[in-house]
Figure (cartoon, rainbow, N blue to C red):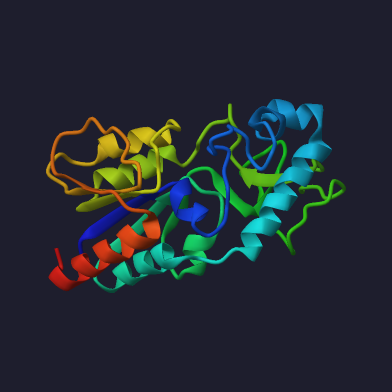
Length: 230
């Protein structure tokens, strides 16, 4: 089976009602990201940070996968599909996709506040401040904050380098290091970009631009790929 690699960004989750800080006002659900999404914010006001991610987790659990998520899952009928997502929700998994790499963590798990490798499932939508890891430190959302390392970036780069087909969906390619992953795709590999606003991409090789929102462009492209077995 051909290896099909998909990099997804905020655009695909936005159509399920999940907002991100990339909204036009530069805020994330009314909060400045430096107050809720950095290690310094956690040190200053852990209760606020915990409350913020508890609210975001509740929104994620109330949201549902959309037509783009379900269309991508259909690709597993004919392709070896790996999703690399910048998003912290679990909508790809709930749509039935088998192989999902979360670059920035996943909000439905918690982690130790002193050792990010210690992660745990969350019962419900809330992490309480009195919940601690096995080392005794408070639990926090299992997400990569601004200023923290992105441990999955190297495995993701290797996955991109092995792709036979590459798709970019709903990403402005504004956040690094994730934005650099497309450069690891081999020159001869076809690249499909689906977004209402196609980002500037400086790559050589086949580049097919589909200027549509994810719920329109992804199902159409999936139907074409499955029909023609490209």
